[in-house]
Length: 545
Image (cartoon, rainbow, N blue to C red; front, side, top):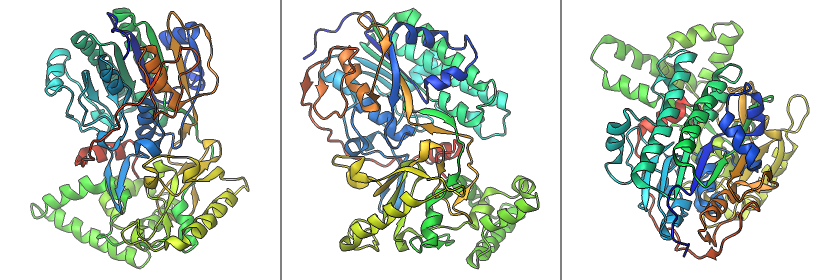
């Protein structure tokens, strides 16, 4: 057991998505003085992210200290055969550091951590983050209305992201969300008097995807810095840990579409059958449902459904929205058409992967990999177990030899999944992991005319984030060789809590290591997310194609 908890806030963990030294160097001088002060007075260094370096998998790795093969989350989607659902907290099959603190008699508060809905029971309070619905369950029950009564509105997502708001209005929305996170954190600290507090800020990632070459990043980081300063002034925690799940930087390469390459090799079959929707149609589901529900109320809906059928019929003979889009682009009419043609009409004419009839495919770009349609594992597997190794070897060789149109290697590494992950949930991973060269390319699971295209995003994730640890026993120094999996054991060490024997990381050398203990394994059952609004939010943010 740990020592008796001390009075006051012992450890504050601040998650700043996509933070890195490079990001800080791009901000205007004086934008984030509190963050800079912590880096100057404590120990800091680059934090090597995992594969894949994306929010839904990386943050669970941060707060459990284990790789995705042990906690089970590889992307925003969970797959059951060819069906999918958005991941939630019940997909994270390992104990979080706040649950381990609770087992040792310590209290924690957690605000906005991704993939924490529905919350578990522990000593303290939690307000979920990404993948939770707009009005999530919190711990303890009834906390959300209490919080909203106390601090005013509290939202998980920016309502201005879809209504045609200007850049200034959207960034104002991000500033509001950041302020809400800080106010919620301080309310919960006052309410629970915890030993550990953990808050995560997501907009530091979003703003670079959307507005990297503007004053928007300065505004977002200034807002985060102000909330951090207010929390430090109010509670003066003994130890402060700042951590990011990955870095971010310019995308100077291509959008690379493995499913197009696999289709050209005869390994991916495509379909335009509306009865076989791809996972990339998520963004249009809400529009389709609205259209269907209003059918018959006026002539417009009937006309729309006829157009959907017409485009679907055109697609069946090869006239897909991708080819239509290419022709319109050449005529410089694509922007005009997109303003007047509803997205559901475009989706109706889209080719997508026919998963049951394919040999191998990329099912979700966030996973960074290719899945083989293995008989006995997938419902309609086309590759026999006897042929699995040979098929995978051919795919590995082909992707390793893939070059850009300029003749440069597309991937810096192509690995078999067991070379990257280990644990009881290895079988949920893609069979082959594709690591873009310097993360300068963006992968896409979509079907287009070409395997290479202009990236839809001018910035993309990079492998190196940042970690900083400050406290009375921490000397100002550089942290070398830190990995994402080291965060959870280091946080526990700051509190004197034994580290789980299942963790893949180690306590960073800036703190004294604690004992290792065998905690009871996670035994919870997976439950469905069943939150269509979450899918829409993730699609709007560009995470789901």
